[in-house]
Amino acid sequence: MDWETDLARWPMADVSRKVLCRPHRWHVQDAGQGDTILLLHGAGGATQSWRGVFPVLAKTHRVIAIDLPGQGFTEMGARGRCGLRHMADDIAALITQEGWEPAAIVSHSAGAAIALQLAQLGHTQHVIGINAALSNFRGVAGWLFPMMAKALAINPLSVRLFSAAATPNSVRNLIKGTGSSLDAEGESLYFRLVRDADHVDATLAMMAQWSLDGLVAQFSAIQTRTDLIVADGDKAVPPASSIDAAKALQNAQIHRVSGLGHLAHEEDPDQIAALILSCLQAA
Image 1 (cartoon, rainbow, N blue to C red):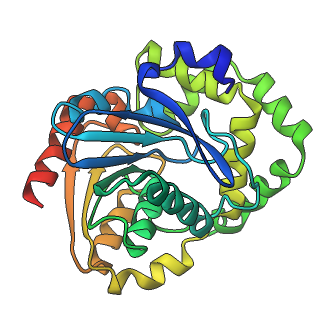
Image 2: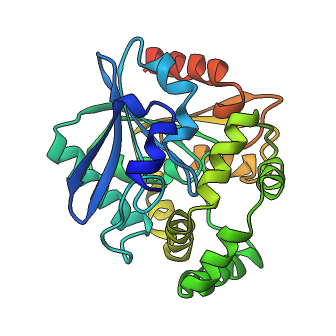
């Protein structure tokens, strides 16, 4: 995404800024006062996924949202650092550089794994995950999906052809495939992301380098308070991913919501924001 031409039409652009913390140049959105909440989106998303939740939380907290490396408006400086541990280390460096002290990290999908890794590095005592992706792909998908991601990621032409071929209807079908239904603005924002070849390339690099083996092996030792919000209509990440993780973690709670899919926080931001605030108050 181009900062000069695309940011003006991006949600919450008025609180956006660039932050250089090597190896990446980060897109940061920062607003509100009070205890700090850090928001981490999932693979393939960006700060726009928090457009409904962010303003609600910012009424009572300082809220900081970032784009992951290469995704959205964050400029990736090292393509080989898109795996879980490298990404967590780079975000940890950003947190330290900027002097942030997150009381909680609120995360979506794969962002929940990054949040737990950051907790292990001492950067928060509270993780809230929305439809958290806390298990590796299973069965055939366990080798097929990463292999496909690697094949596409090493061929820039394939990525650009994929982005160029995307249509509003194909993006709408992708969203529906997650069990979610978004309004026209939500669909349009994802269409803009999919049409950006650099964003798609970074998402594929993340998928190709992704492994949760090390983190999952630590679950039984993780004492961080973890609240996992699970939507019963999620077709992208099985609810069992959060439920199984909660059983393995020392201090985890499950919060179920009905009638929503993988992008629950975009479908009903008021409900999810209220649940997040309830979890923060309980902690």
